[in-house]
Amino acid sequence: MKAFTALLARDLKLAVRVGGGALMGAVFFLIVIVMTPFAVGPNLKLLALIGPAILWLGGELATLLALDRLFAADHEDGSLDLIRTGAVPLEVAILAKAVAHWLTTCLPLVVISPLLGLMLNVEPRALGWVALTLLAGTPALTFIGLVGAALAVALRRGGLLLAILVLPLTIPVLIFGVSAANAAITGPAPFGPPFTILCALSLASVVLGPVAAAAALRYAME
Amino acid sequence: MRLRAENLACSRGGREIFAGLSFSVEGGEALVVSGRNGAGKSSLLRTIAGLLRPTAGTVALEGGTPEASLAEQTHFVGHHDAIKPALSVHENLTFWAQYLGTGGDVTAALDAVELAPLSTLPAAYLSAGQRRRLSLARLVAVKRPLWLLDEPTTALDNVAQQRLSGLMQAHLRAGGLIIAAAHGPIGLERPRELRLGAT
Image 1 (cartoon, chains in turn red, yellow):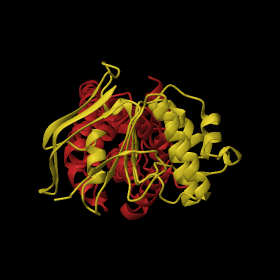
Image 2: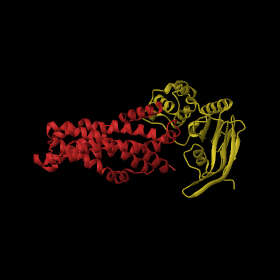
Image 3: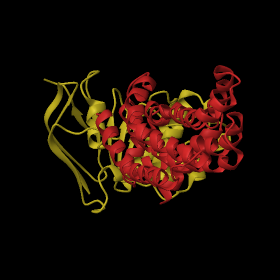
Image 4: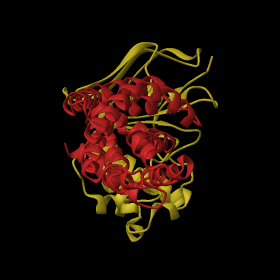
C-alpha cells in the first residue's frame, strides 16, 4: 500500500511541476470547445444539437494527449526498470499511475465541462448531467488508453500509434457517453440505461486495464 | 545465502548472446562480470533482476526471504539513473525508499554519498557524477541482499569511487551479494570474475 501511495504521490507531484502534463489536457479541451462555435457559425439550435458530442470528442482527445508520456518517460530514465523490482506487482504500480493520470488529466476536464457546455448552448439544467457522464466515462478512457500506452512504450514517437490503437476501442464509451448526455438534455430516451452501461464500461476497464497493460509492458520491454 | 544460476541463456533480437551459463555467488561474495562491448554483461544483469526473460535456464536466490521474488530482493543500478529532474534530490530518494522498501533513512543515505548539502536542489541541476551518486544512494536507503551494478563507477570521481568501494565492502561484510559488470577494477578486494564472450 505504501508503494502504491508513494507512486501515486510522485506522479501527481511530477504532473504539477515544471514540464508536467497537468492542465495541458484541460487547456486543449478549452481550445477545442471555444473554436467550435466559430467553426459551426451562429446557429444556436445546431450548436445545442452537437454540443454533447463535441464535449465528449474534445474530452476524449484531451485524455489521449498526456497518455503517450505515461510510461515512456519512466522507460527512458530507467524508472520503469526499478518499478518492476518493487515489492508490489506491476499491475498495482500501473493502477497507481493510471489513477494519477485520471486525477491530473480527466478530473480537470470534468470540472470545467459545465462552463464549456455553456459556450455550446447546452441547457443550463443539463450541464451537471453532462459533467456526470464525463465523470463516469473518463475512467474508461484512461484505463483503455493505458494498454495502448504500455504497448507503445519503447517507440520514439508512440503518440500516433497510441491514437490508432486506442481510439477505436473507446467508441463504445463515446456512444454511450453521448447518448446519456443527449438523454439528459433533450430526452425523450431515459438517462438511466446508457449511463449505467457507461459506468459498467468504466468499471470493467478499471479491472482489466492494469492487467492488460502489465502484460503489454512486460512484452514491450523484452 | 546463495545466488545460483543454472544453464542460463539469453537472446536479444533473435541473436543468442550467451548460453549454458552456470555460476553461483555466496553471501559475502562479489562477482565481477567482464567482457567486450556487446558480450551480454548488461543483459545478464537484467536477466538476474527479472527484467529480461531467459530463453533457457533458471536463476534463484537460496536462503533469501522465501515469499519474496528475486526481483524484490535485488537492487538494480543500470545505465539510467531513474532520477526525475523536476523533483529535488531528497524527493527523488524518498520516493524510491518508499516504493522499494519501507521508507528507510533517506538523510543518512544522502550523507553516505555526500549529497546531503544538496538535498533541496532540483535534480535537474546535478552533474553526471552526482546523479550517479544519487542513484547509488538507493543501495543504502533500502536494504536488499543482492546488488546488481552495471558499471557503477561511470562518471564517479576518485573520492566517490572510494566511497562506493567502502559501501560495497560493508555490504559484503554484512553477508550481501554483489554482481557487477565492469571493464576495470571497481574497488573490490579479490572479486571472482566471470568472463563473457570468451569463446
